Image (cartoon, rainbow, N blue to C red; front, side, top):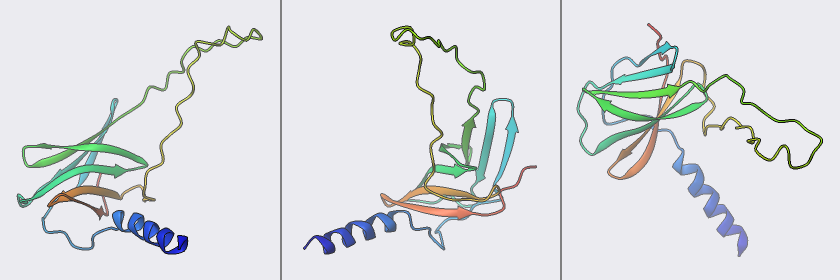
Length: 138
């Protein structure tokens, strides 16, 4: 009784992350720029798809929301501060109370090469994923 339920639940999880081989919209050459504040990925549209909204991008181990700007979707990856916060180290139990726990890097759902990204999009309210290879840095 329990085994069919577990099998069904695992099959549902894997289908939600399945990459699409073909998409019903056309995009141009995807590229990214890097500056002091982080990286920005540009996804130009060749056609204006109906019933499709690009949602998020997974790139170089991070995830960002996509925003439509003049027929180009843009994903901004803001660089986190490399400055270490002040931390109190003491043998007194209450002296370290104000220290903040370190932020651990979040793992993304996908294992990608440096020049690959995954686009999450919604088509007729269904979430889908598409891999783009050879993201260029001009």
